[in-house]
Length: 284
Image: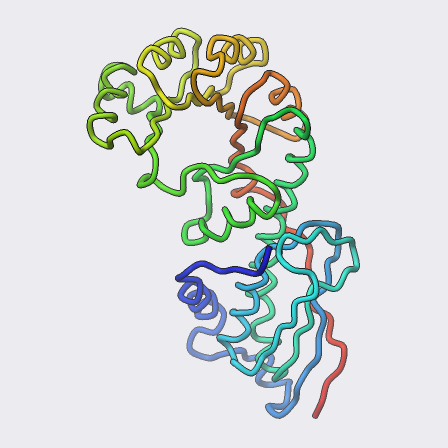
């Protein structure tokens, strides 16, 4: 896949730069580095992983100074080994050094999400289950984080409250049951919007199936109960497992026959991929 950044990325980057520069700018770089100096530098992976976020990183530098050039060597979605060159960065030294941390923060964070997702995808290979994200994302970064999940081989769950119906436990408690909640949702959104219901028990699952839902989220069920739930669903709707999914448990969850495994931590807690910027040469 090619490098990509969603609309609104520049505004987010401007906020990030404002956090760093405030009203005084880069005190260190402006004091130490001559204004006329140019740099040639290399973006390097410090450990194995999957690259994600190059377009956002490149934009961060270009917002500081449009003369900064980023030549991509390993595109978004590429699997790289420790020590691999990801991109070459050239331009005014001050701009490269000022934008370095913002660019690396984004690149490391998004590449970490892609890498974590890729590891889970490998663990469920051959089961038929797919790994999905959730809405547990960083405010303002959802589109980029969900893009990183796709680069890692996962799929995207709903993007927001606006594009699918997911009736959760508090919705059910508020209206007094699954059947009235599903009926109200169907009446409100029509047949083109999928309706999913979160269930904690097999009894709730039976209610959801009777209501004719498109998907059920089997929340925090143990493996025996999860297998029973999949057997009861028997292809009538999408079976999604969620809740405390880890690298140690995901294969067993997939082996129950679920269609989808949603994992919140791949966006909110994935370890960043260590990416560094090494200066190769300076030109006066």
